[in-house]
Amino acid sequence: MKKYLILFFMLVSTSVGALEMKTSPIDTIFAQGEANPYGKFFTGQTYLNMLSSNDSTFNAPIGNVTFEPGARTNWHKHSGGQILLVTGGEGRYQERGKDVQILHKGDVVRIAPNVEHWHGAAPDSWFVHISVETNVPNNQAEWLEPVSDEEYK
Image (cartoon, rainbow, N blue to C red; front, top):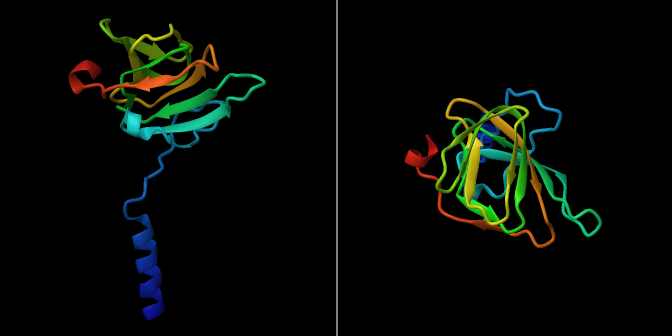
C-alpha cells in the first residue's frame, strides 16, 4: 500500500504546474510542435515547430505556429519584415492604427519591415500559420506590449 501511495504522490507532484499540452483539431501537413519558447510574448497558449532554423546557408527561419483559441502575439515588429501563410483555422491580424483582418486557410499576409502588428487565433477557433522571417540576417523582432482585450475583438 505504501508503495502505491508513493507512486501516486510522484505522479501528482510531477503534473502539478506542468503545461497541459493540447492537440489542435486542425489537420495540417506539419506537426504542431512543442510549447512555444517565446510564450512570454503571447497571450494564451501557442506551439512552435521550427521547419527551417536560421543558418548561414539559407538565412530563412520558417516556423509552424499553432494557436489555441483566443491566443495571440503581443504587439511587435520585425526589422526585416515577415510573411504569414495561413494553413488552418480562423485567425486575426492587425497593424497598428488599422482594422483587424479575419484570416482563413490559404490567406497570405505580407508584413513590411518595422510595421507594428499582432496576429493570433479567433476567440473560438484554433489557428495555424507558417511564419517566414524575411531579409535575414538583419531581421530582429522587437516585442512590445500585450494586445488588450479591447484591441483583440
